Length: 112
Image (cartoon, rainbow, N blue to C red):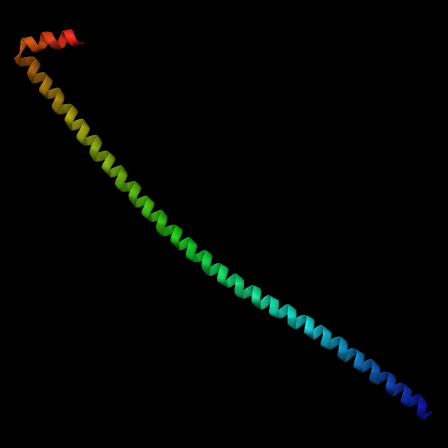
């Protein structure tokens, strides 16, 4: 009877050892997965910071481009206004010349 009890206890000890080994292996696997997850989280945080920085840089660049665009439009409008003013001045000068000189009227008509 003692041998049966010893065999039974020995079998329980061996079963428990196997359970412990299985739990240790599982723990090691989970620890490895946890460490990988932590590294991935750190990498993603760095990537998010880098992307946020790139977004801010792009926003600044876009603002600079928009400002340059607005200045270009203002300059273009000023130049158009100056051109219109020069055209008016030229038209006024032609009218004055045409009114004061019949010779220029004849020349001007013949040039058309």
